[in-house]
Image (cartoon, rainbow, N blue to C red):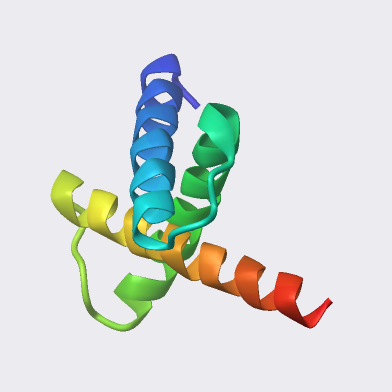
Length: 84
């Protein structure tokens, strides 16, 4: 993976993790945690939404799907925490 792609992945991950934390209140993980949540959410969103025929490969679609993927991840984490 080129260095530029890694930097973009980290920036999109940080934005997506922060935005998801704002949408799903009560889940602040700090900068590193938000990046991890955002990056995992980006993988979820960028896999799930094209399967459903929703977003294309432009930058706005990638950011939106990363945010929604991170929101899905935070909701699942919340459900697991409540069940456990």
